[in-house]
Length: 45
Image 1 (tube, one colour):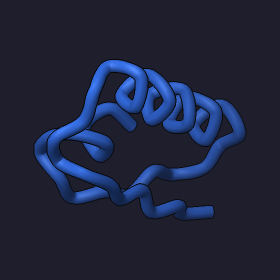
Image 2 (cartoon, one colour; image 1 turned 45 degrees about the vertical axis):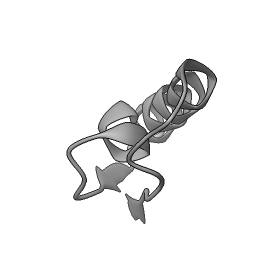
Image 3 (cartoon, helix red, strand yellow; image 1 turned 60 degrees about the vertical axis):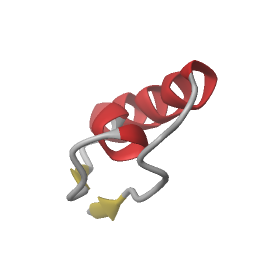
Image 4 (cartoon, rainbow, N blue to C red; image 1 turned 180 degrees about the horizontal axis):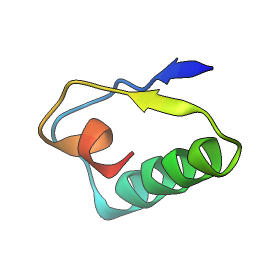
């Protein structure tokens, strides 16, 4: 399954950690993470 992740481009360390954990969990389950940003939530995921 493809899963889109979107979010703010200017985030704090706590939000970045949550987004990174989300991206890892999605990948571990075999999903493709789709995002288009160069920073913030999308970069962390």
